[in-house]
View 1 (cartoon, rainbow, N blue to C red):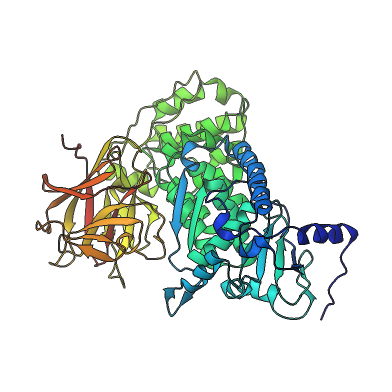
View 2 (view 1 turned 90 degrees about the horizontal axis):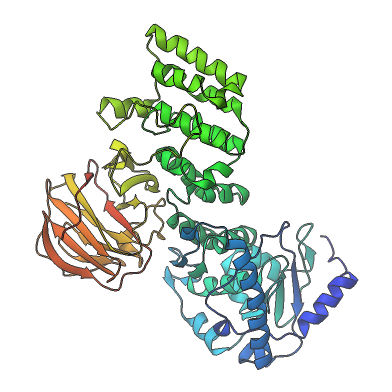
Amino acid sequence: ELPAPPPSAAQSAALGDSRSTPPVPWSSLPGGGSVAPPPTAMPAVVAQPLLAPSPGVGGRAADAAAEAAQGYGRGAAAAAARTAGMHPELQHTLEIQAEKPPLALFGHESSAWLDLLDAGDLLDCALRGGDGPPVACHRMVLATASPWFRNALVGPPRQIDDTSWVRAAPGATELHLQGCPGYGAAALVRFVYTGKLRVDGAGELLELYRISRVVQVASLQEAAEDGLLAMLSDETCAEMLSAALCDACVRVRDSCYQHALGNFEAVAATDAFLLLEENVVDHLIKSESLQARSEEAIYECLLRWMTSGGGVRGERLAKNIRFATMPPRFLEGHLASPIVSRSPRLRALLEQGLAVARTGAAAQPRPLIAASNAAGGDVSRQPSASPGGGTPAPRSRSLRGEFAFDTSRSHPNYRVVDGGTLAVLKEDGDSEHSALLLPAVPRAGRHYAEFLLENTGTPDCYIQVGVCTGTHDVLGGTPAYQSDSGWCFSCHNGNLLHYDQGSEYSSRLPREGDRVGLLVDMDMHTLEIYVNGEPQGVMVRDLPKHLYFVVDGGDQGQTIRILPTPAPL
């Protein structure tokens, strides 16, 4: 019922300038993009008529292409400045295919609109970011991609919210997303038509995630989350957790929390862990799900964070440490340290724990540390820090080998135990589910992961093992072999499975009690399968550079164990 607000002088000038700029054809834009700092406000949307059909809509005008190149050049400079301090694993280029493309007919992707777009036919709309040229498209496609676009393009003139308003116009229309970078508008159009993203790092994914929430393109939000989760590792976890908290990316935030809880010492050894806010560290330290070699190791990780700024911060967090479970020798050594001498609160907690430890009274350890000790895990009870000096970075991954299952990158139907070396299917699923191994396969050299099929659930052994890019919807229930980003060996029939299609590979069919190995040569970009140590030949060639080992299973009771087997010669 609200009338359209009259444009201000600045808005009128901006509208006048934009009407003189022909939209850039989608196919002429670069495949990559740049990262710009996220805007502080929601985008304002202005619908305006284009003056007359211009060569920038139906063809490739030289001036439009020049403006696009200039705008993207400025964006690239901003991207370089923002990503300079990021971990190298967060700067990788990713290609992501949405599991549920926004433009689909009868459940299948439609190429008709894409053909019209590539040909420059029937274009009646353009999407403009704040620092780029308008990108030509079809208003019908945008309107069907999300209710937000439909609301902006359909109906009488109205005010959407405090910062968004629409002025409807007949004929061709331009939508201006204020605060959205130019590459974001181009990537959004590209995704709506193809269901594909090509991004240069986590910065772009976070920006596209923010845009997707505003314009309500759910499949873009899921694709951005999948891409971010594909970059999750011990080295990137803390940095991604901070970014996810800033951008309200709940799914990534929760996965980072789960990863940090399951791999606490390795995550705490990174520099980014020292930059976490106090409430985030508190959430980790007090969790009953925290896994580490010992309570002493958890305390040393916390101490490293507390003293990283030169002083002693966050002393209240030490109340979550179970000092009474530590050996008296360890506590005595730390009571004599200079760090404790500067913190009366920390000294009091240590003295209280020492008093209980000396009595020999049983103290309650954390559940997962107690389970590790009972299972005979490699749990060091000796202090790894010098009480009189600083606290070194804690050791990591003492309970497992190079690769391990991780709850943050496994479907909830899996129970991951034994320090990440064992995955068990809780119940029958409606289809197979994925469990990824972390970290990602290093980008050079030969790397090997071997699995023992302790329990196959059924005699037919419906278990798939292979590699994937990690961009499929792992937590949503999509198995790797059904995506275009996964290559799996079927233990059931010996076929190579990719994009839910099978091709003959090996006649050797593993069953319960057998070992299946995966040898990835990242220099040759090949995957070879081993069954009980016997090579079956190269199964896949031309693999991408960013990969994870993966297991797909779906029958209750299936139990797959990772073996510490060295790579074959």
